[in-house]
Length: 152
Image 1 (cartoon, rainbow, N blue to C red):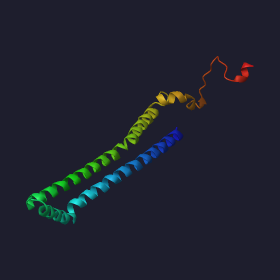
Image 2: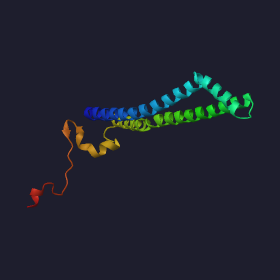
Image 3: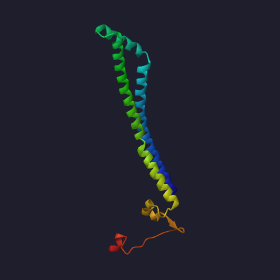
Image 4: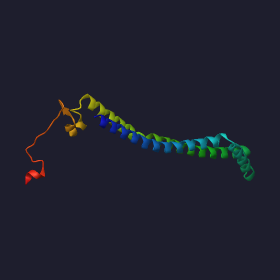
């Protein structure tokens, strides 16, 4: 039984490791997109946007205020798209861990069932021969021949 527990936890750890790597990749993309969006809003790009607004004012018949508002609205649309990409990346990172969570829950249920009543645990019904009764293995005798040699 201890060997089974060790195997179970080793498999659980491997599954967690694979899922964590996938989540890390998704979360990394979300963080990068978020940082780019924040840098666009709060950095020296603001000066460029003002310049673009004034340029739009000179090339068109729009007023200076209207040209600046158009450039600002366009920038907010770009920032919104980047934030939506970041949010979808964060959601996929969380979803990558769902398999590990469900496997962990299933393994805990099996462990509880095995510890409470090992003889009646559904998984152990197939492995009844691995449990001993009073230090002896329980044998199930049948009338059918077991060995192909006995058919000769």
